[in-house]
Amino acid sequence: MRDLSALAREARALAVLGLPLIGGHMAQISMHITDTVMLGWYSVEALAAVVLGATGFFVLFIVGSGFAWAVMPKVAAANANGDAAEVRRTTRMALWLSLIFGAAVMPLLWFSGPLLRALGQDDALAAAAEGYLRIAGWGIFPALIVMVLKSYLAALERTGVVLWATVAGAVLNALLNWALIFGNWGAPELGVTGAAIATLATQLLTLGLTAGYAALHPALRRYTLFVRFWRPDWGAFAAVFRLGWPIGLTSLAESGLFAASALMMGWVGTQELAAHGIALEIVSLIFMIHVGLANAATIRAGQAHGRVDTAGLRLVAATGLALVLGIALLAVVLFLVAPEPLIGLFLSPDDPARPAILAIGASLLAVAALFQLADAGQVMALGLLRGIQDTRVPMIYASVSYWLVGIPASYVLGFTLGWGGPGIWAGLAIGLALAFALLVWRFWHRAGAAAPLPA
Image 1 (cartoon, rainbow, N blue to C red):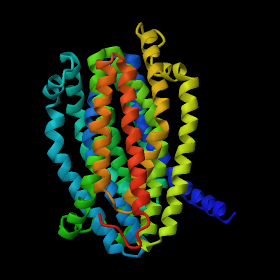
Image 2: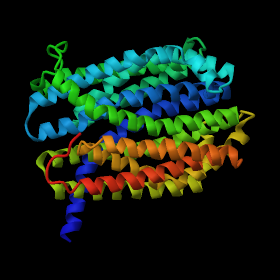
Image 3: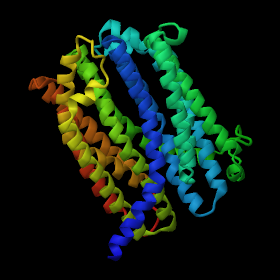
Image 4: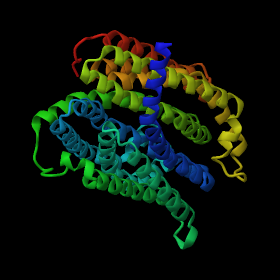
C-alpha cells in the first residue's frame, strides 16, 4: 500500500507539472496540423511541398533545441538548491548558444532547393519547399529562443504560461492560415507562401508573450535574466554546450529517422508523401502527450538528482514509464479502430486523390500502432536520462538505433522487399523498439549512483 501511495503521489506531481506542458506541446503541434489540414484542402501538391519544407526546418530546429533541453535539468537542480545565480547563468548562455546556432543554419534554409533536389525530390516540390523556407526559415531564431524560455519557466514550475503563450500562437496561426492560404477576408490567396507568413508571425507572437513574462513577472525578477545580457559567462556557456550538444544530436537522430522516412515516401510518390504527412501529424499529436510527461519527468528527476535522492529518482522513473505506456495502449486502439475518420479530417471531401490517400494513410496508422509503446518508452527514458544530466551515451544509443538500424530497415522493407509505405514505417518501429530497450537499460543502470552523474 505504501508503494502504491507513493506512486499515486508521484503520478499527481508529474500530472501537475506535465498537463500544462502537454497542452503547450499539443497547441504547438496543432499549428502543424492546421497547416496540414488547410494545405490539404488547398491542394495535395501544396501539402507535399510544405511537408518537405517543414520537415527540413524541424530537423534543424530540433538539433538547436538541445541547448534549450539542457536548461531544464540544470535549472531544476539549481533551483532545488536555491542557486538563483546558476539559474540565470545557465539560461542566459543557452540563449546565446541558440542564437549562434540559428545564424549558422540559416543558409541551409535559404538555399534548401538544391539540397532537396540532390536528395531526389521532384523539381517543382523542391522549388515550392524552398519558397516556403525562405520566409518560414527566419522563424528559427524566435522558435529557439522560445524553447529556451519555456524550459527555464518549466524548470521553475511555471508551466501555465508555456501553455497559454502557445495557445495564443495556435489561434493566430489558424486565423492567418485561413486568410492567407485561401485568400479569405479580403486577403490575397498565397497558398504555400501564406502558410509560411502565418508560421513566422505566430513564432514572433509567442516570443513576445514568453519573453515578456520572463522579464516582467515580479516573482522572476530576482533572476535578472536579461540584465547585461551581452556579458558572456564562458563557464556556463561551456557547461550548457557540453550537456546540450548530445541532446541536440540525439534529437537529430530521432527526427532524422522521420525525415528520412519523408524523403523515402517522396521517392514512392506524391500521394504517399501526402498520406505520410497526415499520418505523422496524427502520431505526433499523441507523441506530444509523451513529450510533456517526459519533460515533467526531467524536472522531477533533476530535482531528485540535485538532492542525491536515488529512491526518489527511481520512483519518478517507474511512475513516468507507467503513465506513458498506458497512454500508448489507448493510442494503439484508436489507430486500429478509426484510421480513416482520422485521415479524412485532413482532406477535402471533393479531392479526387482522397480515396487513395485514405487507404495509404490507414495502412500507415496500422503500422504506427505497432511502435506506440516503444516510442512512448524511449522518449520517457530520454527525459529521465536528461534529468540526471546523462546525455552522451544515450546519444550513441539513439544514433545506432535510429540511423544504423531504423533507416536501413525502412529502406530494405520499403524498397528491397517492396512493401512500400508500410515497409518504411515498419523500419521506424524497429529503430524505436531498439532505442527503447537500450535507453531504459541505461537509466536503470545509472540511477543507482549515489552521487550526481557527469554530463
